[in-house]
Length: 432
Ligand SMILES: Cc1ncc(COP(=O)(O)O)c(C=O)c1O
Image (spheres, rainbow, N blue to C red):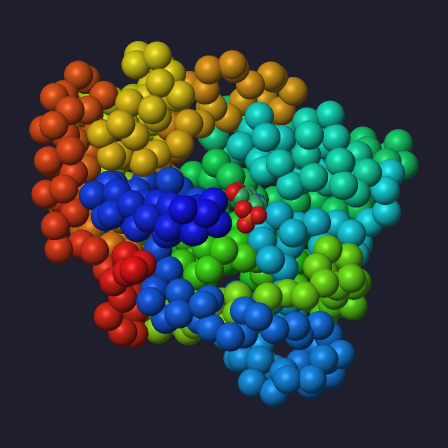
């Protein structure tokens, strides 16, 4: 058989096997989620084959009549869910959304302040030395928020002091970026925004992880708390297609728009915009209850893990106010070993080093795992299911019999094979 035909068959078979496997797992990666059938159908629609550069109604291609309308619906829904004066639905990922803001608002050599990856920040707002996008791609200098390891949050006083001294040294940041990848508790945006404005910086809130919780009104509301711009991924707690989005105050509209096109994007994948619009509509209808369920499931999972004898980060702080739970796995040889052991029994997680002061190097072996409850919640898991999930994880990490772990995972997944919080029946796995 020809290599082409062989590979064609192989890839189709691998996709089927992937879906069959995932239907028997506990998907606990905090940055992932399940998109509804409607969103996935939109992704495979003809809109995915079209070009639509330029704003709706003034494209530089013909054939955009319906895609224009879809984009307008997406912008309208996002404005209502996230606030702000304008929405840019074009960025094709959260990283690209951040880079678009940096490209539009800063020039290489400018300074930004962000959360270091050591303290739980994301590479998109990191320096060149840390192989971060802001430094590597746009030549930005990056200063870091000071971090309070006990509170697992930004240290307000020390960070403001630092920004004031940068200001005195005429090295004021152009943009100050809140938000994180390891994001258990809301950031002290409200306490800092006034002083940040005084030193002339624009306030960006990277809500990549928590966008679905913000839309549901169950996390801090960045635009109400004073952010100038909000960027996010559309597929983490927001359960849409993989993509990005920007919301902002009107004075930033033009610069951000240039940062997106032609700054970081040429065509913006109109099928993605359709998927985003459908997910936003689902969030508008079901977002409140979904976000509540995600957060109460995260709390229930953390409590049950802790009761079973596991070390969970942030006990004194109530463990979590988001979708995330951080588990200490040092007694099992660290995060990589634990991640691989759990994967071998169909529990999908990812390694996570603990947040530390910004300039403290991260350890070679990450101390733990970051777990997220968004996807399980969308699959219909309740607080009582979280007790069984915690018990299975504890059993698996403590030498539980492999076959028994996998059986228990299959049992708890029974009847939970479609996306809740959808307008229509939404099987999670349907690839032929
Ligand atoms: C805080 C934060 N910002 C940005 C991103 C990048 O998002 P994406 O993967 O959509 O590019 C991530 C991804 O995990 C993130 O955690």
